Amino acid sequence: MGRREKPVDPDAGPIQRLAHELRVLREKGGKPPYREMAKRAGYSPTALSQAAAGEQLPSPAVVRAYAEALDADPDEWQRRWREADAEVRAPSPDERPPYRGLARFEPGDSDLFFGREALVAGLVELVQEHRFAAVFGPSGSGKSSLLRAGLIPRLRQAAGAERPAMIRVLTPGERPARTHEKALVPLDGDGETWVIVDQFEELFTLCHDREERDRFLDLLLAARRPESRLHVVIAVRGDFYGHCAGRRELAEAVSRANLLVGPMSPDELREVITDGAGPGLSTRTYWYDGKAGEYQTALGLITEDSRAAFVAALKDQLKGREGFDPDLFDATLSEDSITAALDDMAFTADGGLRVTFDRGEVGVPPAGTYIVALPRETITPWLSGFGKRVQRQTVKPSRSLDLGAAHVPEPAVPTHTATGDNDTDCKKVKCIALTFDDGPAAPETGTLLTYLAEYEARATFFTTGQNVAAHPQLVRAEAKAGHEVANHSWNHPDLTNLTPEQIASQLNRTSDAIKTATGKAPSAFRPPYGAMDAKVKAATTLSPVMWDVDTEDWKYRDAAKVAQTVIDQTQRNGVVLMHDIHPTSVAAVPQILRALTAQGYHFVTVSHLRATL
Image 1: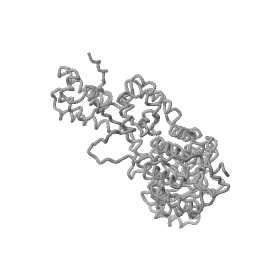
Image 2: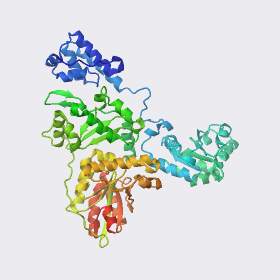
Image 3: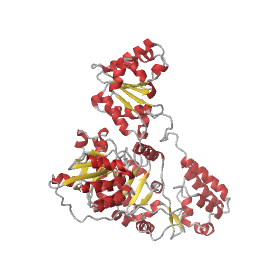
Image 4: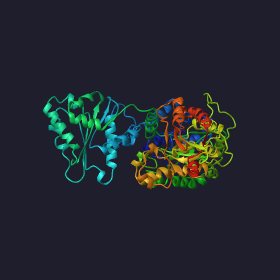
C-alpha cells in the first residue's frame, strides 16, 4: 500500500491550487495507483505523484500526461498550468522592479542602484570637502538618481556629527526664494542641514524675476560661509553650465566643486544588468534521472538520512554573512518547504556542490541572493545514488548529451605545476610584481596562466570571493602554478563606506573561499578602488597591497596600449595593476613578458617581492 499524500491547501498559492485540482481529477477517475497511471502516461510514478504534491510547479508535459492517464482533456489542463505559471511569475504587489527605465531611483531604491558606486564615492568625497557642490550631466544621465539613491542614503548612513540633522530635496520652480526660503534655513541645534536642489536649470527656465532669482542664489550661496551649518548640492543639466557664469559667486562655487555625470563604462553596465537582475529573478534547477527514467527534485541529490547534516552545513556556511537571518533560514528549510527552498543546486567542475538561495529566502531582501559552495569531500558522503551519478558525470562526462544545440566545450583548466619555491633574490636582480584583480574569469584566467607558464613568470591574483566560489578550479590552478592568491573582497564594494562588521564579512568570506579552493588562506588583500582608511585597516589582519603602475585597462580596452603602459612605466621592484577579467588585458601579457624579460626583469609574487627586499 502506497504512502498517503500530504494534505495540500488550494488557497496557499497557484502551485498548491493546481496540485489540488490534479488530486480531484484523480479522485473522480477512481483514484488509480500512480504505478497504473505511469503505464498509461509514459512517466514514472514519482514524476506523477510529485506533480500533485504542491511543492513546486511541474512541467507542462507532466501535467498533460497526468490528464491523459485519467482520460481528461490535456489541452484544458495545459491551460490551467499556464494560468498557474503566470501567477507564479507575476510580481507581488510590494515587489520593486530592478530596472527603472527612464524613471529616477529614489532613496528607498538604493539597494537596486547598481553601476554607479565609483561615482557615488566621488560625490561623497566632493561634498565632504565643499559646502556647496554641483553635479552636471546631460538630460537622462542619471543626476537625480545619483543624488537620491546614491548620495542621500550615504549621508543617512553617516555616524555621529557627520550625520545630517535634516535632508531636504527641492526643485526651484517659478518662485524659488518665496517657496523655499524656510527650507534653506538650517535646523536649530548642532546638526547640519543638507539641501539637494534637483533640476537647478528651472531657475533659468521658470523663474523670470531677476530679483527672485538673485535672492534664491543668496540663500544657497550662504552655505559657503565658514560659520554656516548648511550644505547645498545642486544638479544642473549640462547645457545650462554657461548660465552659472552669470553670477560671479555662483561661477566660483561651481568651478571649485563640480562632478560630471558621464556614460557608464562596460563594466558598470554589466553590473547594472547582472546585479540588477539578481534581486528580481529567482532560479531553479530541473533534474531528470535517465537511468530511472523519471524527474528528480534538486533535493533528490541528497539522501534523506543526510539531509539534516546537509542543512546544518549550509547554515554554518551562511553564518556571519551580511543580512543572513538564521530564524528565516529555519522556517524556509522546514520539513514542509525544504524541497521548494532547495530547488537550485548544481555541481561544480571539481565535484563540489553549489547551492543558491533566492533573494529574501534566507536573509533580508537587500542582501540579494546567497550562494553556498560545499567542497567535494564534504558533500560526497551525503549524496544519493542519483547524486553520485550526477557528480561523476559532471567531473568526468562519459559521453556528450545531444539536446539539439551546438556543443560548446567548457574552457579547459590549465594544469601547470610550479617546479618549486622561487629563489629569485630581488636585492640582486630586477624584479617586478604583476597583479591581476577581480577574477578569476573563464576562459580569460586560464589563458593568462598559460602565458605566464611559458615564461615561468609568477603573479599575484587578487580574487573576489563570488568569483572564487564560481570558479574554484581556476583558483586551484593559480595556486598549483606557484602564483599568489590574495583577497579582493567578496563583491567589490568600497570598503570605506561599510561598517567594521561588514568589512570583516567581505574579507573573511573571501579568505574562507580561497582556503576552501586552495587549502591555504591568503595573507594579503587589495581594497577595491584602492579605498583604504583606518577603519578598513583595523578590521583585518591581512596585509594591504596597492600598486605603482595603473594600466587603467578597465578604461582602455586596447591590448597594445595596455602593454605599452606597463613597458614604459615599469621600474625595478614595482607593482603593476591589471585585471584578468578583460580579454584585452590578458592579450597584452605576452608582449609585456617578452619586453620585460628582454630588459632583465624577473616576475615574482607580491609577497616574494616584499620578503626579499
